[in-house]
Image 1 (cartoon, rainbow, N blue to C red):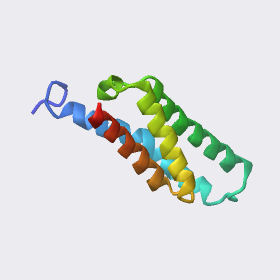
Image 2: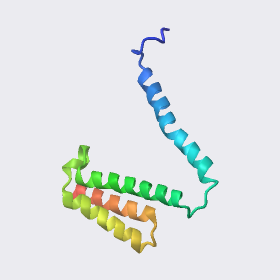
Image 3: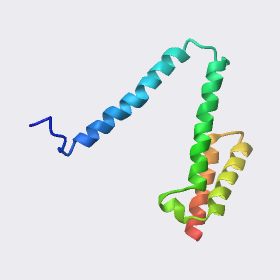
Length: 115
């Protein structure tokens, strides 16, 4: 078997596995190593939480405003309304994330089925 040729069927999968592991696991390891020695209310961890929250909010906004795939065929009012009502359910349920996500998802799916 010639490993210098990259035309074997498994090469892209191996590359994705290695690249994905290197890109994420190093940061996870460093986070555990450094985060375990820091106070929970330290400015560095507050910054990390803010950045993580902003990234999640950005992904959600992109899915609502600029969707791709099948979600792009749904109307904007349905995507935005499902997100807003999911957030309301999250707040009414005592800030339970699962309730908010499942409510928003169920409303989006119901709306898609009714259209």
